[in-house]
Length: 140
Image (cartoon, rainbow, N blue to C red; front, side, top):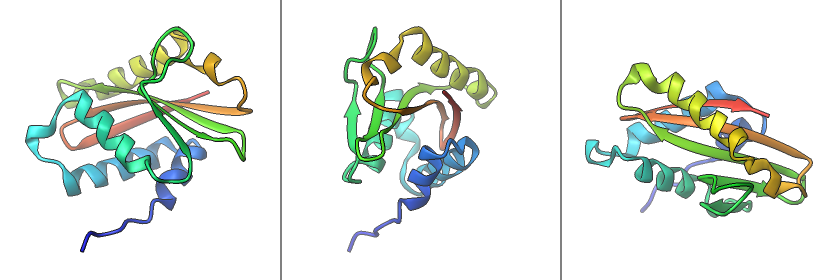
């Protein structure tokens, strides 16, 4: 029988901008599930999309918004909240902070928020992955 995980802490971290907690949660999931064969940006993208799927929230992967396609958007029409994610794969652990900041800057540069005008609160995350570690940095 498949193990079912309580994703309440995951979504609490996302909606409340707790990037350190989000980093820890994503890292814990990675350590439990992936193999060293899985170290590609597309894998990390699909992995994260799978974590948030079937959650009751609207989940959009690579949908046009602003001047491009953010990797992932999670939206809650009932509360007027949305979260935008941009993912990067780091080549070494020392690059994670830079890559997460670069992902966050991409959200701004490409104006991904403009496609979500119907939401009152939008939080943005640049997330860098290196092997079985995630680093999330939030911004508004």
